[in-house]
Length: 103
Image (cartoon, rainbow, N blue to C red):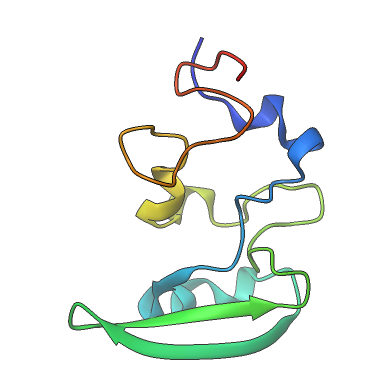
């Protein structure tokens, strides 16, 4: 077994796909793929890179469509790619282990 969000997203509602700081370049490149309505944009610098947090009214990622699929999956940032990897603090899925077994 391997980690697979598809198995649990109907149960968890993809709550892990929340608003997060992303490189501003990523937002600029993909903002045309945004699905959820933007409530506020917050920009700041982090590690010499412009970042942006795209806040939505439901606090889910603006790129998460209403079927709970990522609209920028192939271009998603490292924080999304690393989710579920138990080597990273606070990146654990509450429903399954990295190997895909249930918690």
